[in-house]
Length: 104
Image 1: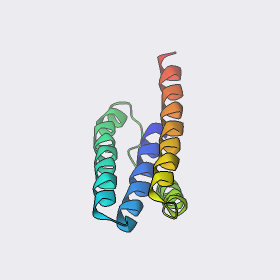
Image 2: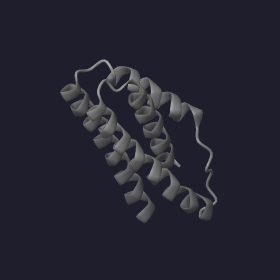
Image 3: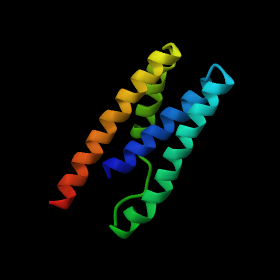
Image 4: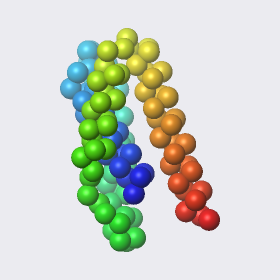
């Protein structure tokens, strides 16, 4: 399911960013975001299982998250937040479209 793989991608992205965060406040902020994504992954798994969908994390989704982190980590913190916000908005929009299609 695309939404779950998006969460897997976000987990990999934020894990990589946490490992490279430059300061304690930045590490705390990234850690909080990572916690939210991790919680979403946990909540999605039973839903996927009930629908008979795969709960396997796609390595290509993880690799995509790591690639995105490589791009973002080079940015100054304000630019990083702006770019990350754009990434999140794109994901939210894709998820919204999937939910609309699922409702029929």
